[in-house]
Image (cartoon, rainbow, N blue to C red; front, side):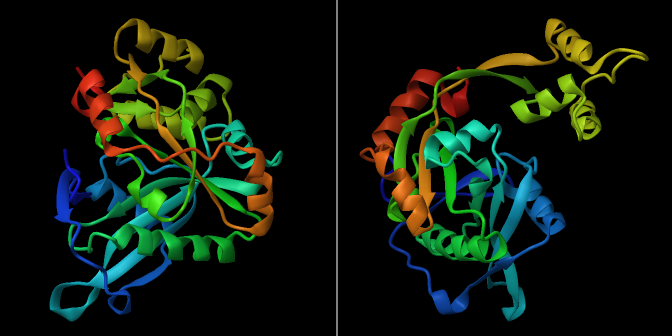
Length: 274
């Protein structure tokens, strides 16, 4: 059981750093970064390389080569797969009052408690850039060894686990429900969602073929495969007094343990595969 090391990612590989290292705040800075920079950094390092529907990207800058500051961490705040995610876990009827922490990544060069330092300051930037947002929902995937230790360290409210669900995958990547909905309904952005599937290796829609029929064909041919996704640990950060008041009647459960992650991985297989 890994209890004395923190998991990191670099070049899309899982690495670990010792928990006895402590970040020196004076050597680091947190600032907003462009989506172009965030997209490239994510694609280079994160195990989920596809850039999500983002609202704000924040970068952690630390000591780099030749004494220059370099990008060593990334947080991406974005829109949820459905508005119900925000309403269910924050207590707000208006989903615009919340967002989702879609990606959190620190390179192995950052000290073990770097995520909590980084996340706390990213929340400040979020409030400055998006003052209408009062709460942030985040998920930890036990299939990749995560149980939300950093979220617990920041006193996030643990809401429990999501329901197991079946997802569609292509070339080892899960296709988001939002992207599939755009394609089926011809919503704004459906062209980009189709292009993403084609870039992953799916044949392009035939001339005159409705995109919804195209998805059905890909599924029948086994190009899009169904995969059972294990439950995710769900957290909520109430950033304002009003958000804390709204969350008073919502679950605030005991934090999951790393043993819960190991149990899930044994039942699902490493990285969610048998």
